[in-house]
Length: 448
Image (cartoon, rainbow, N blue to C red; front, side):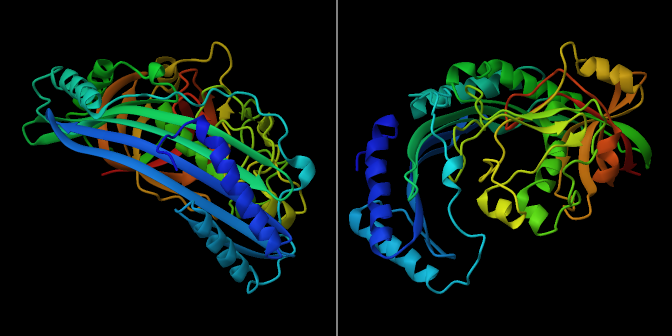
C-alpha cells in the first residue's frame, strides 16, 4: 500500500472492506460490518527554545464484526494485506460461534442508513515540516516568556497535525468513506514569585490550519493566565455560585450527555434514568445536536454503524427530548437508533443573540467563584454526586478579586442542573460541545 493518507486512498480501503465482507459471507456469517482506516500525524514540542520531542505517527487498522444469527464476534488487525484480512475474518467467525445468543445484536436497520453525503469540509491537509513546526512552537513559547520577567520556566509549546481516512461498509450494502484532519498549537508556561509558582496554558485547535490562532498570541495568552494566578489562596468552606469558563463548562454539560447515553440507560447506571420527557434544566435552556456543521470537530454524515446523522433537539425548554442511541442500546430500550453509535455529533448549548459575555456574567454573579481549570474525575454517573478540584478566581462586586487554588467544588448534578442561571455568548468552538460561560448556583466549595 502507498504511504499517502488522503482521499485517493478511499477506493483502496473500499476494496479491503469489500474483501472482508465477501469472506465473512462465504464463511457463513448472516451479517457483517467492517471499518478500515489509515492515519498519519506529526507532533513537535519545544521547551525553553530547545527541541524536546519530534514524533511522527502512522497507523492503519481494520476491524470486523460478524453475526451468526444473534451471535456476535469481533476481531481487528493492523495489517491490511489480503491474507491478514482473511485470517482476521476467520478469527471473528470463530469467536461468534462461541458467544451467547443476544436478541439485540445485529446491524443497524437498513432504512436508517445514510444515503446522502454532503461535503462537511473536514479535511484540510497541513504540509508542515518538522523544522517549520519547531519554528512555530519556538515563536509561541518565546512570545509568552517575553511577557513578564516572572515567566522563567515553561512546560513547552507544541504543534500537532493529524490526518486520517476511513471506510465503513456492511452487508446491508452500505459503503462510504471520508477523510478528516485536526491541527493544534498549545503552550504551557510557569510563573514564579519567591516560593509561589503557578502554571497555566492556552491552545488553539481547528480542522483547517488557517483557522488556528496566531502562535504569538497563544503564547501571550498562556503567559497572562499564568501571571494572573500568582498569589493564589484557598477559600473558606461554604456555598457560592460558580461561573465556569467556556473551556471547562463543556465538561459540566458532558456529564449530562453521559447520563442520557443508551448504554447508561439500559444498564440502569445513570443518575438521569428514564429522563426522557422530564424537566432537567430551567425552561429557557435549549440544546441542539447539529451533526453536519462545516469544519466542526464532531461533524459526520453517518455514525459508527452507517446510520445517517440528522439535526435533533436533545433538550427543549429544559426538557430532555430523548437519548443518544446506537442500534444495540436502542433495541435494549425498545427504541430505534438515533445515529449516535460512537458518540455525540456537535452539541450546541443555546446562547441567544445578545447573550452576555463573561464580564457581564461576573457582574450578574456579583460574588462567587470563576472556575478556569478542573482536576480529578470525582463524578458518580449513577448517583450524580459531583466533586472536583478547581482553580480560578474569587469574585467580589462583579470583579476578579484574587486567584484561588487547592479547593473542591461539590454538589449533586440532579440538583445543580435546575440551578443553571445563565449561559454566555462567549462560545468556545474547540470541541464537540459548543457553549459559552456557564453560571450555576448552589455549589459547596471546600477549602480551608
